[in-house]
Image (cartoon, rainbow, N blue to C red; front, top):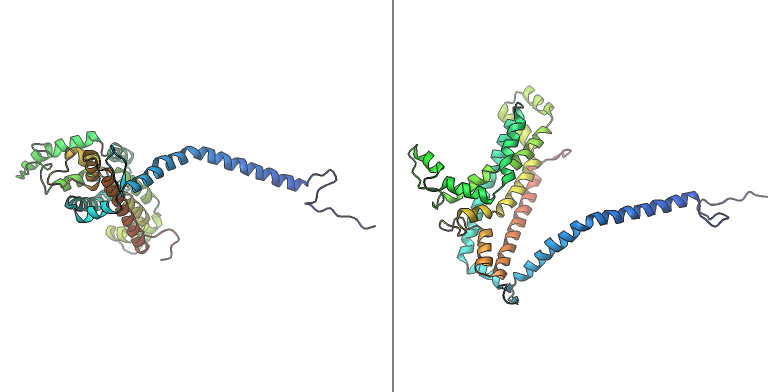
Length: 324
């Protein structure tokens, strides 16, 4: 008689599957439990994301197409708020120009200062821990109310900065009330908070192989050539990350401009950045629908900048293993 064969997947005489099928079933059950546990731990974040971020964003998008003053129900008016913004509101156009000037001037200077200090800390190891913490401290404080108050006192009429410049014969009469110096004053405040990008730059510098600098020295490259040919290409991804982050952050400037200008955007509307103008329209004039439209214009501006940066990064950002 021929010997019968039992398939590994066929049930045995007692009606149960093979040991292999039991293991597969247990593994599948364990994977299911782990998946449910993962979603359970993720649930608070998901609730916050959809309830406190996505939900309000969608509602504000709806409000941007309405006339709404909090005290009465929103009334749908279509694109009237957006048409009014770009064709009938010269104050908004001026606030856009001030914001763009602040972003385009302040962000590069801030990143240049952060990279310069990071290079010094990377070169001089003695006491670098102390200086790294000291330079990072302003970023922890941020553009808080207390900092803005101190900044206003420093750059105001007869303030320390004005008195120091008067020694050299420069009597500016204060920066806070000067139309030409208001934006530079805000740029200096932004540059003062260079600690966060500096730490990121420093981490990137630590990852550059020393062999590349040694090879450049063998080829006779000096400090400038090594910086241009080795440091910048190897650090390009970090530069891109900081540039994107700081540009978007600059579009959101509000607290310091509000405190320094007493909520007016003065002098001459130079500090009336988009976010401050949005606040005044929404909470001072109670034009919440109009303020929502301004908020979404800021979102679109930031998104366009991000798209431009990502598109341009293809030609100057290099990653490990990239053959370009």
